[in-house]
Image (cartoon, rainbow, N blue to C red; front, side):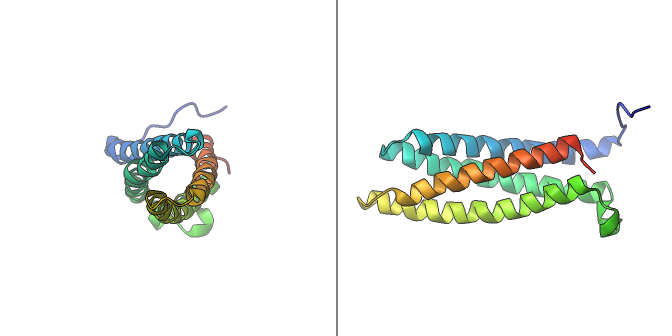
Length: 153
């Protein structure tokens, strides 16, 4: 026999909603930013759009996702469970969220410098690095979505 559904207390719904909403905003900003950077082909407006999508959509989405994650984490009582008893999917999500946040900040720093260089008439090479890091983040967050939805281990 398998479990088809789990009933959770209603007071868990809003923190989970905040977490999922933040994750969706984060991924939407990453997709928009990466697409704009990819299709820019040297067009300064699209390069700037790509960076500002990451800055104004992805970063606030990451903050919202992480706040919601911590909120639901404590609501569900995972903070009272010993580390060796926590499920693998929770560890995967936490590591990807925290490491992804660090990579996102590095991406924004590189992208910000790249936009400044672009305005000064210099090359857009740093924005290409921003594109690569954005795609790496997207791949990592796909793994996180798989872990959160599939609950391995």
